[in-house]
Length: 356
Image (cartoon, rainbow, N blue to C red; front, top):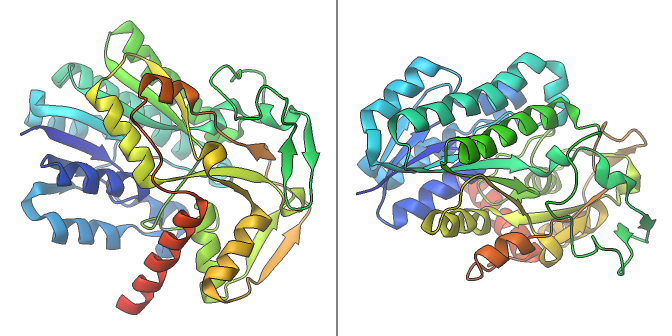
């Protein structure tokens, strides 16, 4: 039986990966020490999700409360399972622009050093395994903000005849832009993954995600756009819109669709690849458009405030062009559109309230 090792296994993409690969019959080794609660407070803790995974899968899911920066413990774990590890899905991260600026050392060591520890452990103990890294569109910094954007009634948009109208592809430069410290630490990790693929001939890929979302997201003020927005709409907690008149656009991909993309790569891996992956033109929205859908689904009005001060380096408009990935893996298709995603998040949050 192949072993799938997943970092950040109680988080959004990590737990979706657990479900996906456990249902295929694989043994799952999960690594998660709930740093999310350290970053964003107790309300963002993923312990509830860890407990649910353990209850659901029993011995098929083995959880390890390890910090990915701890080289000795990580290498000990990899050595224990050795070449039985067929796939590493690395989702653990410090994911927030704003938090990174408050503690640059922790941000960088988690995102960059932690990735290096995992890559080197893979090279030492299971070099034939597939290594998938959950990167981010923030590696492009604020370069997308210099596109010729047009302000419409509910969103910023780009002209239909522009080369990036379909979405931003991997040709966009990651240089000479403001990334935020979070973006810089993810760039370092992204490049490391590419280098281990190209230099050591390992089966590695960086998936540069748009907004990753889904029902298992422990949304918080500083991270988890749609999940936190729905939470605020349901609970009456005030939401703050930062700049751009609430018309900033994001493409949103359901956690299932992303992990399904991982699965397709795992079946036919390449070495040192980079893929932009997100909701593309299939699933995207502005802040104002997302608010309208949340209010419709919940039957409640969102209480929100607005500040002209946008987050430094934040994107005004970002839609992913997933054409490269689809050209390599044409059998992969989306299951969820934007409304499907928000319905799923809404139902999950209501269910959690009932359970508690």
